[in-house]
Image (cartoon, rainbow, N blue to C red; front, side, top):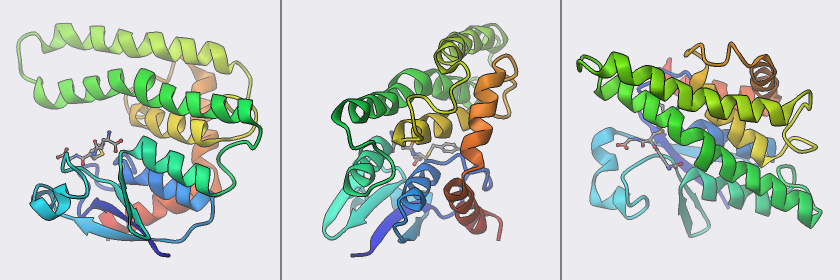
Length: 212
Ligand code: GTB
């Protein structure tokens, strides 16, 4: 059955691969599943037909054989459970890979999203310049902790997994921030993720939409 995901008709990042459809494309590329993309406008995302798929009016969604999913964590976990390549078979390493997916989404991504939101919505406010270092420090704390865990491992826990896919996807949002400069092993980890053929295909596919 054909898999269909949704993505921005025109991503605000201009094709840098930062919108969350890229991580779903990447997961599908890793497991070798073909997919189609339905592009949606900001207006269409807030209309009832789309809200029936994604209650919060966001991309991406995932549809296959009558199943509709939203939330990239749930979508990628579903893909990883359904197809080989993103989760170890043994129960304990499998559980740990899932823990890293949650760590990426629940521990690492929130301060990054908060910093991005502050830069968009609070720029120009008199207190923005004082608040930004505080937001940066929250991220730096998490990066130092993650860097200490990673050490000189290539991936977070054994072979590349959905945990790494999610972590790399989240860290990519920091690429232009300078915050990765102090954690060279994380910068190298990011580069390893970006160098995976499946990531390259996912990146190229979203870019083709946004940089025609
Ligand atoms: N928790 C949800 C998930 O993981 O699926 C979050 C989904 C989400 O935030 N979707 C965003 C969206 O649809 C796009 S990815 N926003 C529109 C809205 O809420 O109205 C977030 C995103 C957008 C743009 C950039 N950028 O331009 O750099 C980066 C990330």
